[in-house]
Amino acid sequence: MRRALVTGVTGQDGSYLCELLVARGYEVHGLVRRPPVAGPTPVQLHVGDLGDVQGLTRLVAAVDPHEVYHLAAQSDVGRSFEQPELTQATNATGTAHLLEALDNAAPGARFLLASTAAMFASSPHPQDEDAPVDPRSPYGASKAAAHRATTLARESRGRFAVAAILFNHESPRRAGTVVTRRIARAAARIEAGATDPLELGRLGSVRDWGWAPEYVEAMWRMLQADTPADLVLATGEGHTVAEFCAAAFAHAGLEWTDHVLHDAALDRPVPDDSLIGDPARARSTIGWQARTRALEVARLMVDAEREALERPRR
Ligand code: NAP
Image (cartoon, rainbow, N blue to C red):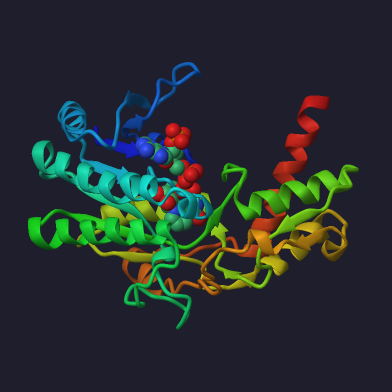
């Protein structure tokens, strides 16, 4: 049986990826920061710390994974401006520590990093794998370092190590602070009678939003490839935050401009206005293509928020 070690199992992508791996017959192990409060899961959970190379080495030796998916991160871009050091320690140093533990105890394990479009400059776009690296946030900078550590593990150590360059991908499991969740939740709440407006930062920012379960499928495919390659995972379509709002609110029978306000205090300190990916290489090398596009993502997320609102009343 193939064994996978996944970090970040409690997050959006980690949860979908674990489901996929379990369904494909893997023995799945997850690294968590604290003991779980819920009952047993099909994933074997291990409490550990990305700051502790010795502990990670022991974990890796015990699990002896064939594949390692490193998804754990301080993934909140806004928070990274407030806590740059913590972001760097978790995302950059944490990745270096995990790679060192793999060198110590699992030299043959394949490794995937959840890298990000946030390491790229806003233009030119669409951004492909060779786009200029010019991060606009401490988060992007920390991930650019993790990305480089991953390519170095491949180039200097010969490890099958790849970086999935993830453009935004969403789902009802997205963190509640993320703009797409906030928009979907507000649309569903206002449809149900709430009256408070939704305040957002830059409404003209362009993002390439896909559907998270499709992206974890691509991560899995990246580790099954014959040769290791870093790949952009994206839909290839850009939409403004305003367009995402329009789709979500229209799905709830509402006009978004009646309910959404721009609050300049929520604008990012350094704008990164246009992140649109070019997924051509992923299509040609691993046969992957995003199917669900941004405006459909908005509608699916409103449906999920509606269901969540109705659940307690049943
Ligand atoms: P998420 O929902 O925010 O999940 C982050 C995960 O990382 C959680 O399981 C969290 O655990 C864990 N974590 C945070 N700090 C940690 C630490 N110090 N030690 C160990 N674990 C820690 O993120 P996601 O949306 O699933 O994203 C998965 C990965 O893809 C992340 O690396 C993110 O940066 C990257 N990415 C995501 C997107 C996107 O659109 N979703 C785009 C580009 C890149 P706790 O439950 O303990 O907090």
